[in-house]
Length: 148
Image 1 (cartoon, one colour):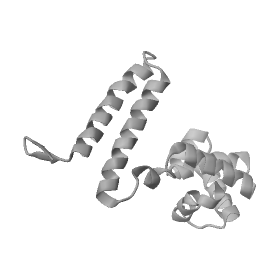
Image 2 (cartoon, rainbow, N blue to C red; image 1 turned 30 degrees about the vertical axis):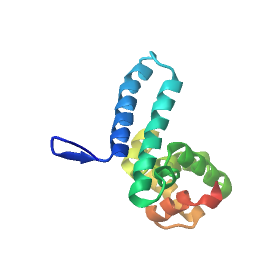
Image 3 (tube, helix red, strand yellow; image 1 turned 180 degrees about the horizontal axis):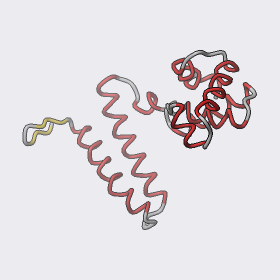
């Protein structure tokens, strides 16, 4: 255990903090195209690995396992699978993508440049086709592993 100025941290927590600092320092260079994508990927993987060690020590569970179905790529893939499996229209697919990311009707209407009533109609149609009645049920559907 490391101690300094009233803060007590485990060695693996210090490693996670160092990895997050490294990632934080890498992002501006990546955005300004001074560093390649591989540098950012490596820093991100190092942070995830460090957090995985901390989480395993705390709960005996993997950090990555607990977030894997929340990763944007996975959610995007799940939305595409749902659109295909349930025969959603293109516009319903756009609305579903925003709903899957927790966006509300006014936000979606603004981004898609349509009325809130249009978004509500699409949302109702999506829920009907999916056989659900709430955003919580949508979240449960998006988290299902059997759709992957």
